[in-house]
Length: 330
Image (cartoon, rainbow, N blue to C red):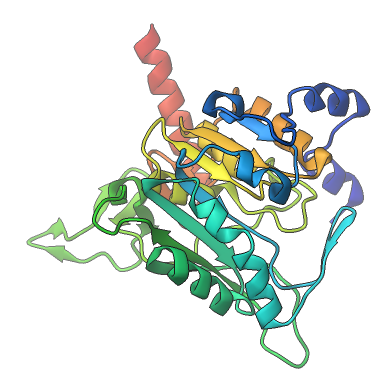
């Protein structure tokens, strides 16, 4: 692609020195032995090393905890390098902080823990030790390097657990998927389990634990940052809508560039995230600021999630909705 076109379409978030200075003033920095109340951290970005402040955080304050920790890979996070280790050492690493994070979850709360094939057995172990595991979501990455002597890694896991399997929030109606019907089937001339619309034939279905509709953020998406392991907003939207009640609290102990907080804000939930990299925190704050005027989540339109390569249909619906809102305001 022409470099000029690429530059013009590149929407990757950046910060000027002035913005860094401004957004850094919005960050919360907790001190040792500080008494932390819930109002001190709600709708805030906490710029600290999790392991230094985890014991300061209020017990049982979060409705939903989303954890995207460093996987058992050697990875550079803009100056901090996480080193891969043996399976047993990585399990010890998880056990050193995971139970403390679980203590921050409400009795009826839910927790999601991310990983890849290499560390998923360790994730399952710590989940089973501390929660009731309800499922394992596997989602398809459509990006990634090829491998000459192995299968390309195109999947990641998200382990889903709760404190009380008899009492937890799960709204399946909020996370339905809309797919185009390729072979419409009718009974007595009427659609069976699908609908005919002006823009095509669609079926709205309940979600499974395999997700093939997620797009990894890339340079032409406004949610994109330079974070090396950024999760897509659409992925977080599914978890938040399903497992956090409206006005509930989403907590992310490894916030990164702020996706969980941003999506929580867009979906009218409260949020709190801990991140030790100050620049990442400022990225999160800028994204939160942008979300005030732009609450759109790519792939989530008209109250449902859409399959990949359906952006043109979603744009038509958004324009139609905006026009209807305009007419209603007249």
